[in-house]
Amino acid sequence: MTCHEQHLLDDHEDDTDAQPPPTYESTTSDPKEKSDTAPVPQPVPQPVPSSDVVDPPGLPSGLPASSAFNRYILAKREHGIVSLNYVINPRAPRTWKAAQWEATLTVLCHDVPRLMREGLFWSVDNIVPEEGFIQAARPESKAIGYSHVRTWILTDKPESRGGHRTPDWVACLEVSTTTIEGLAGFRPKTLTRAHIWKANAWDVHRRPIYNYDSYAPAQNFNCVYDDMPLRGWWPWPRGEDRE
Image (tube, rainbow, N blue to C red):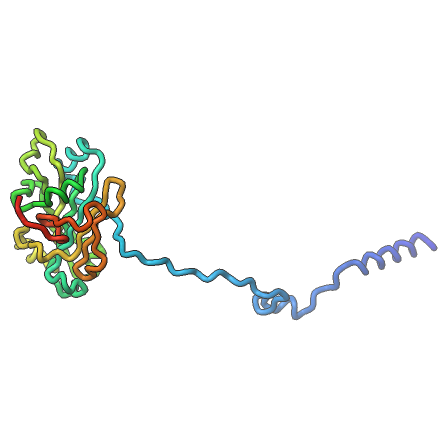
C-alpha cells in the first residue's frame, strides 16, 4: 500500500467517527417548537398568606421637622407607637371614597403601657403652636380622592417647645380632605372617640401589642393588659373617662 492510499484510508476512518451533516429541516426549524426532552416543570408560585396584624407605620412626614419631636428623640431614644385612625363613619370604613376627610394620630411614646394604665388624653391644648403646615396628599390618599393633608404637632407638654421640659410623648395629627377648602376649615376639635375606626400600638421593638377594629371587633386584642378598661382616646375596652 502506497503512502497516498494509506492517507485516503485514514481520512475515510476519520469520517466514520464524525457526525453527519445537519439536515435542512434542523437548520430552519425553531428549537422551541421541537425538543427531544420533556419540558422541566416550573414551581408554581404560592400565595403569600395575609395577616390581620398591622405593621407599624413609618414616621409621619411632619415629625422630623418638628423641634418638639427632635427634642423628644434626643432625650428618649427608643419609643413605642400608638396609631389612631378616624373616619366620618367608622361602621362603614369601606365608603372612604365618599368621605370628606380622614385623620390619623400617630403617637411616639417610650412607655406605651403607661399610656394604657393612665389613659391617652389629648385636646387642642396639646397642639404645639407654630409647627403646623399643609402639603399635597400622598399617592395612596390621592387614589381614594384626597387632595391635601394638614399636619398638627402635639405633645403632652406643648409649652416644652422652648427646651426646658422633655415631653413624655409627641404626636402628629394628619387630616386628609377631598378639597383644600375643606382642609382650611377643619379643626381638630371636630374629632371624637366615636370617629375612631382603627387603633394599634407597638412596643419599642415594633411588636404589635394592641389592636382595635370597629369593622372586625373579633380581632380586637390587648397583649399588655388583656380586658382591663382603658380611658381617654383608647377605643377598647372602654373605661371611666377621668383624667
